[in-house]
Structure formats: structure tokens, C-alpha cells
Image 1 (tube, rainbow, N blue to C red):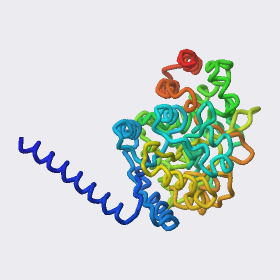
Image 2: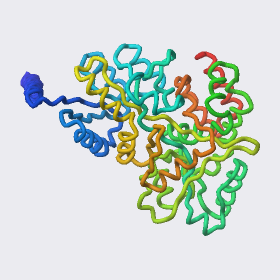
Image 3: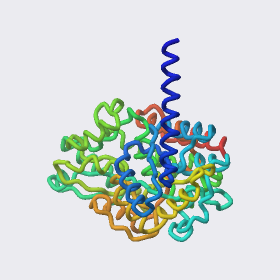
Length: 412
């Protein structure tokens, strides 16, 4: 009983303090907005960005209130359902974001200044409804590529592979010299799918125009191209670390950072981990099989939208217009964590050489989002499982592809 009284007292105290703060803020003539996000690692960076915005709009303060990433979707929905949702919030791309718009929670961003003019159709598409309405302002994308130890490459006289066949030959050469070619493991499961399989998949099935054919059923997920991607995972399995079954994502980072593995197929968000590496490293695009064009998985990761029910909807839209401007995007790019790239159609020079190297890989290549995100998100778990089974030799590439087509057919 005493414990319940204490909890009740604390809840009342928090409410009183909250009301008091709001009264003080109102008296000061300041609009105080909250911003929800799943990027709990970016508190310092985003606070710097919001502080800069407050210099432009001194009567507006935006408080960054991120949620633990795995809990974000459920927490945000609970907040919105109960009328306590943040004024601004990070929007998931494709179906999860569309769901909140259809539910009436997310504001319409279509006519916010800069949205139509400063972003390409492909950049807007992940946050666009079938009728063309845009429900969030694109904020940042991430890229996939192979991190490689330049120091070891130079020492052994090795060069960047130009085809998948060259890549396998390179792995074989490194293994013969006593190196562990690749740092990737499967213990955390998600990274072998998102970073490796979905990173190389566009090399086999093509970019967005071809992806749509798989989504409609014009192409099947057990055709030669898709099966070939699973075959690639089978072929590369022997070049993963010894005991890869128990190698976590953090372990993989450590293997590469301590030069115990020569390469690591990963995302751009990891680039900052190797800022103090004791060796020279670089990046190359995972090459396509001979006869196919190398493509890049450049994934739309973050966008920001506003709560339709917010009493500060006007101020929220003004902030989004700033984010959609070259000035706002340039400042955002300077505070975003390394490896998160602005999506605006403006020339933005990044300070970090490796960030520019990542972006440079896109030049002249077709890019696309991770294959399952736009229409096949329900395939995420079974595809993850299939990739790991193929690597472990528990399933053939054709069996894996057949299973994916069966699952995809049920979703079309």
C-alpha cells in the first residue's frame, strides 16, 4: 500500500512540474516542441542541430526525446493513440509510415516549401502515399559497401575486385595467406541479411525498376537471378570467421578494427567506429557477377514528420521547411553521425573523407533501397532465416529461393 502511495505521489509531482514548466514557457512566449526518434545514439548531434535552429527561431525550442530503437514503433503508436505523441517525430519509410498517415496521426508534408523542389522522386518515394501525398521530409540515407584493410592489400599486392568472381578469388588468396577474409558473423542475424545479402542483391536482380517486377509477380523470387544471390552466400560462407555462428555484430567490428579480418561487408553507419584505426582502410562496392552492372544498396533510413494533432503544427511545419532547404540540410549533414547522408538535391561537401568515399561509390551506378522494405517487409524474418541456413549448408540456394517465392506469393 505504501509503495502504491509513493508511486502515485511521484506521478502527481511529475504532472505538477510539467504543468508548471508549460506555464513558464507560455509566459515566456516560447513554443516548446518535442521530437521523437529511434536514434538514441544521436542525442548530442541532434541537440546541436536543434540549438542552431533556435538561433534562427528564438521563440521556438525543440526537445529531442528518443526511444530505445526496438521499442520505437510501439511506443510512438501508444503515444499517438493516447494523445501524448511528440510534435515532431522520425518517420519509418514505406508501410510503417503509411500506416500512421492512414490512421490520421501524421501531417501532410506535400506542400511544405522545399519538399517537391529539393528532393528527387526516388528520395520522396519511401515516404509517399499511393496518391502522391508526402508524409515526411527525407532526412538521411545509409549505404552498403565493403570495408577493406588497405594496409594489408598493399602489403600483399592485392587490388580491389571488379567482379564477384574476382571477389571470391581475392577471398581465396587471403585465406591461403593465413588471413580471415571477412569479419561478418551470423549471431545477431540481422546484419548478415541487411548488410550482406540485401547489400549484394541489387547486383543480381537489378534496381528499383526490377524490384517492382518481383513485387507484382512478373518476376519470381526463385528465378535464376534471385537464386544466384543465395548461391553467392553459399560460396562466401567458407571465408567467414572461424566460429562465425557465434560472432556478433560487435565482434565483427572488433575483428576488422583489430586487423584480425581483412574485409567487412557493412553499412556506412559503422564508419565512425574506425576513426582511430591503426591502419589505412577504404571502401569498395560489392561487385556484380561478370556480365552484370554493379549496383549499390543506398537505403532511405530517416525522415521527419509532424503530429497532425500538435498545437504547434505551424512551428513544426516551419522546422520541416528548414530541413527541406539547402541551408538546413547542409547544417544537418555537419552534425549527423558519420555514415548518414543527406538526401536533398543540393551539393553538400562532407568533411570526412570516408563519408565522401561512400557517396562516391554511388556515382554512375544504379541505387535502390533494401529489397524487402517497400512491399515485402513480412519477408524479412523468413529471408533472414533462409540466408543463415544457406550459409550453414542446411538449405540449398534453390530451396531458399523457392521458400521465398512461396512466401512472396502469399503477400501479393
